[in-house]
Image (cartoon, rainbow, N blue to C red; front, side):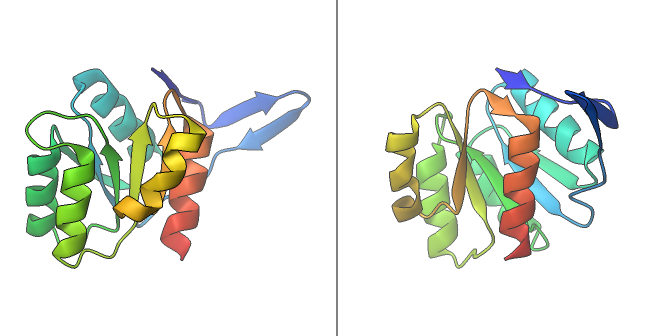
Length: 143
């Protein structure tokens, strides 16, 4: 499940927050096996200015990264068929991929603390909140 902000201006209480192209110049890969979730994530990130590639499983994710050396970050679902997100991340790290990889997971915060040891740069819990996702990706790409 995803919570997404679609308009370019969002009202928060009495304040209005203008949405910018926060991810302009980013080239991201979304690895997600659920088609609706994959489409929503792609649409959100594209709306924020990113170029987005998609993969339906870990094998496709590894192939996509290898075929597109300009990828600046990956959003990796953990539970996917063929090759899960943890195995795909390990393989990418072993191949020398140093760009941020964000685990997209329903794991609790306590469980997610171990993701850095698995090669992830950060994690975003499901349901995904659009502003949290954009803020996390932006901060990781700025490093």
